[in-house]
Image (cartoon, rainbow, N blue to C red; front, side, top):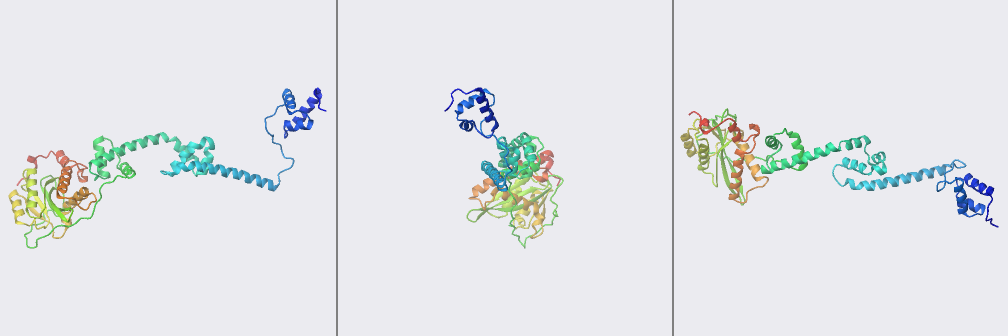
Length: 401
């Protein structure tokens, strides 16, 4: 028979029994005593003997067997592997592209509040010291990336203005002059590589000179010395072809000053008659005002050994000079100019679509060559800027006859 009114000693014994069994619950003790669990819970609370919910751990009566220890270790390992798999699943989105090491650092930064820096670094294969350094320098790195982005934008503008021809050295010179800051060429090269920006590279030269064995020749007054102390004293002349679709050609004749590398005169025609080179010589006379006493160095092409060109040089007071037959090195500066011209105007194409486009592209490039294109030998200045620095005028340029 269940008692309704329990004596104080029974209540105290019931509470003491509950306290003596830390691995049991109120419900199990109440069942043993044959009382309502809520009644026992009230007695425990009144006695101040309440315990945290759940089963309390207790030292086992006997040490675990080897099999029990092995099972416990395996269960722990399984839990760890499951947690690592979950971490790697979350980290997968950080490895879609870009710098793999930086991606790992960013993953640790985003997940460390839950899984801890030490564990994440171990799972992802990075050192904690490297991670902390990366996080500590984040602000400076952000500022550097912003500065690089601004410089990349300026580099792209200069590259586009050069029709995509400028490389590292000329772009560096342009930036230094326009911004007034000391931009390092190695930094420019690094940013150009990262941005996929590059100048036009050299291509193979093509020899187009057709000599006339029976024509009169002149001595070599240059001797491969492509320098001059002052402008309007030594020139080199040459002809190059402009390929047109359909197997057609135009031809460009040039007159280049060895002191300033200025293109003093030039002419374009759809033929290789002598008046092509005499027209270029006449243009140089108009530019300089007077060529008397200067040296005009050419190859042995039939146009330059012609009677018409010889007469034009004599009338202008120009001394003729010729390279050795078949030696492009004797007129290397003109050959280099022609290669640069076609490299930067064709830009990888094999030909122009028509003669009009060839003439327009040539005129545009030749004008920019004199006025804006930077020359490495001139301290990254354009030929006209170089001459202006020397205070050259048509009067001061005229050499003594």
